[in-house]
Image (cartoon, rainbow, N blue to C red):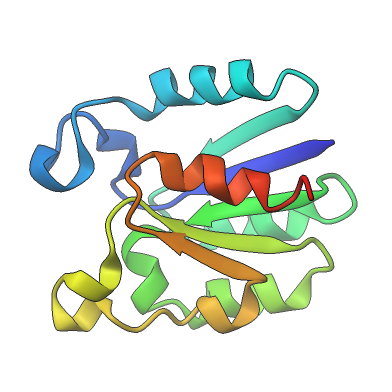
Length: 138
C-alpha cells in the first residue's frame, strides 16, 4: 500500500508555531514514527504553502497512491480549487486536522473540502494523521 500525506500552509512550522494548539513536535519527527508504526506501507509526504502546488500534487496522486491524507490548513476554509481537485481524482482522500476546527474561530467551522473527502478526522493532535491513515487499511 502506498499513501500520501499532503500538508498545506504553515504546517511546515509545526513545533514552532502556536504550541498550545499544535504542540511542540515537528511533523518530520512524527512522520518517522508513523513510518515505524506501518512498516508495510509506503508513506510519502508533501508540504506546500501554495494552493496551486497542492492542486497539482493531488492531480499527480491519481494512479500512484492508494489514498491521500490531507491537512489543507487554512485552505480548508477557502479553497474551491482544492475541493475541486479532490472531487476530480479517483484517489480517495481523507481530511485531517490537528485541532478541532469546530471548537475554534467561527470562520474555521466550515470545510470546503470535507464534502469531497471520504471522511474527516480532527482534534486528536498529530494522532489525527495516524487515524486518517488507518482508514485506508480496513
